[in-house]
Each structure stands twice: as C-alpha cells, then as structure tokens.
Image (cartoon, rainbow, N blue to C red; front, top):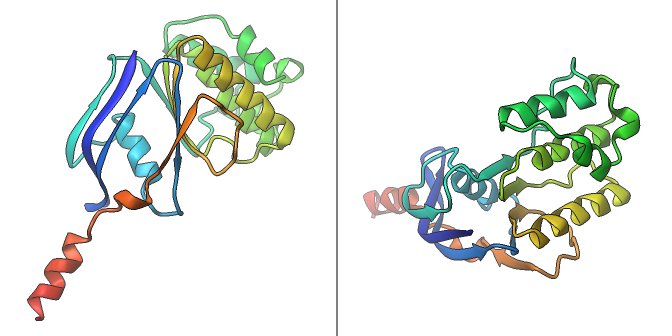
Length: 205
C-alpha cells in the first residue's frame, strides 16, 4: 500500500493555494503537515481524500482504502456512543466496535447519548470511528482539537498501532505526537503564486 502525490496543485474557492507538491507515503509511515493557518493544509487533505478535485497533478492510492476525519466529529447526538460506532461500522461493512471503545476509553460511556458528551469525549468518539472503518489510509485534519493530554496520548497510541499494522496516516497537527515513523512536510514553500493578483497588477502597469 502506498499514497503517491505527483506535482499537485490545489485550490480553495477557485484560488490556487498550494502548487508543485510531490511526495509518497508507504505502508507503516506517517506524514505530518505543518504550516501557518490558511496555508492550505485543509485544502490539501480534502484533495488527498478526493473530496475535491485537484487543479492539476495526480493522487494515487488503492481504491476504497481511505478515510477522512475533518474538524467535525461526525456523530449523531441522539444516538448513544455505541450506536454511533455501530452506525459507522455498518457504513463500512463491518460490525465489531469493542476495540474502538477500548482504544479511547469509551466503554463506560457506551450507552450515553452523544449529545450529552463533553467536547473532548465527542472528539474521542469521532476519532474512534476510524477504527471501525477497516480503511488503511487515514487522512486527518487537526485530530487533537479539544483533547486533553491523556486523550492525545490515546490518539498517538492508536496511530502508532495503525502504522505498525501497515497503515498510513497523513495529518495536519501542531502537536508533537512522538511518532518516530512520521515525516514532517512544511507546506509553506509550496504556496501558490497568486496568479489572479499578478493579472490585476499587469492590467494597471
């Protein structure tokens, strides 16, 4: 399994934000995206997950083997913790959820409606969804938001186990997760030239 990016250009709102990106992430490896707010990390992740098309370039990985987790937790407030995980497991053609509950210490909350969880508990539940998908490539946008130090440790352990099993993780985070397997990519040098502004300037020269 491998995720390969070749000469990728991505845009937000019709404006190019990153250009000339090429990299590869192999099984058992993680890639951590860094860069200032607004640099294009979320746009890049959404493009990698094929939630939006690239302007140009290629993204290659095995079909139907990727899962994306963005800023939203992706949970249904009226359903219990276990019902939420069961729902997502069924979406991906799976049934087992006990390992996901255990990984994020959610067993005691299994019957609690998700709408009554704290922000940190909701985030743990949202991340637990990854474990019931069976997908090998995780694309994660600021996954540690709302997590305390203990929960960040849980997340890092889950990612480490995923990589040990041959999985791949691409994530944007400002927190050092202590992942020796991770390569850091600063997206700032790939910020696209604002062609729209260049055209505007030329028109008034």
